[in-house]
Structures are given as C-alpha cells and as structure tokens.
Length: 352
Image (cartoon, rainbow, N blue to C red):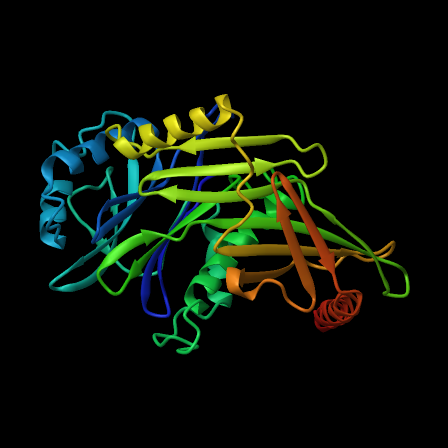
C-alpha cells in the first residue's frame, strides 16, 4: 500500500508520498509518508510506523532545523543510537538543500552507516508503477518546458498523483494496485524552500458513449477527493457524489505532536458542530480523470489538470455551490477525444 518517490521535475526537487499504512493483518490506517522537517529538508519514509516515529523524533531533537546540512544529517543518521530499533526498520528518501547543492539520498536503518545518493529514488509496493509514470512525463529534462507557463511544473507533477488516484477513483484499487487513497507532493520553491502542493480537487468522470461514438451522458466516479495541507497537517475530504455523504480525514506525520495538527482538528470540529462544514470544491487546481465507456469498448483513463484560472473551458464547465457540483461536457469534444483515444489504443494493440 506504500509509495514514496524522490525525483526532479525539470530540475526542481520533488517528493511524492501516499497517506495510508497497513499492518500484516491487512488493517489500514492513515498516516503521512512525507514530512517537511524544515524549509530546506524534507523526507519520505516507508517501513514500520514505530521505527519511523523513533527516527523522526531523533531528527527533531538532534538537528538544528534552522540550518540543516547534508553533513549534519549524516552525523545524526549514522549515529548508532538512531538506528537502534530492535526488530523493526524504516527507509528514508530525503532531499536537503545546503551550500553544497541539492542532495537526494536514501537511508536504510538496517544499513545505517551510509547514505546512498541518487535520483530518482522509489520505495514501496507502488514504486515500479510510479517509476513508469514519472518516466513518461520526461522529467529528466533539466529546463522548464514552458517558461511562460507558471503552472507547468505543478500541472505535470499533479498528473502523476491524478493517474495514481485514478486507480482509486474509477475502480477498486486496494488489492489490484496496492495503492492508498490519496497522495501528496512536496516541491522546492525558488530554489530554497519546500512547500506542499495543495488545495487540489480530484474529480473522476465516466463519459458514456453510444455504439457510433456519440456522446450520451456523464456521471461521477466512485468519489471526489479534495486535498489540503497546513504545513505538516494534511486533510483529505471525500464526497460520495451519489449519496452526498462526506468525510474529512486529518492526517498527521510520525514524530512529535505538531501544533498545526491540533489547530486543524479543532477547526474542523468547530465547523462540524456548528454545521458550518461544506465540501471545499473551489481549489487552485482541478484534476480530472475521464473514462469513456460504450457498450463494446472502454478507453484507458484520460487526464486533464487545470489551474483555477483555466475554468471554464470550451469543452468542460464546472459549477460549484455549497456541497454541490455540476459538470457539463461539450459533446463535440467528448466524441473527438473518444475517437482519438480509441484509435490510438487499437493501433497500439495491433502493433504488439
């Protein structure tokens, strides 16, 4: 159920992690895999939660978080007491930015005397799939692909999490894909500080077509997901579009209790008890996953990531009100997209 990755998005250091952990009995819990330790140091973890708790508490206690360097990190992580975890273990993928540059490395508590530099790095049961997705985005290019588009890096990174979320939103995924139900992103801004890429809405759409490729209707997938972050407190809002049922999950990281987590919990409790909670549809980014379906054919899932300023578009309109969302699809766009995706998919099948 685990996925963490450290890589560069057109030269920008990035981390991706899921928000779910499981035990050997198959029980699931929510816990952050990403931790923003300081402006210039961020980590992702996999392994046993109790081991992650211990190591992250040690990092909080031992580091000067105002001036983390690769050397100071190495000193703490290779200290024998840090990895004295008994029979449990933890793996870290870290980014640290210091005077010597931008450093990505892996650390394993079972082999703690060394840091293993490299990029990209993946860990967890979803690592192979994530690696394939990240490769298709051509992130290895060091130069920003669209210098005049300030959203391009965010859009490309969100395309990764939307594709991963698509497995959850458009079908049962936990056993087949072994992924969690939400993902989050840390990106380096302005070359000096990490920040969560948050305030994102994930919307799955099933677009029904007839046998002749004509548009019939659109409906939502299994759930609509909204991701928010307040420093190291993550909130995932889930809406069942068919019943109107809503749930809000506050997810904290391993380590010491953080004030932002307590603040998020208190704020959400106040809104619920005073009946002021509404589903937070309006977002900075809208991540759409489309599944075109006819009686005889279903396309692979298609993805579109739209910054707030790009809504509405000619092919899609989204209207929001309190606990309500309406999506309108341009039939001509649906028919054109269905034909292109179907033809490409069938051509790929013939070539193999």
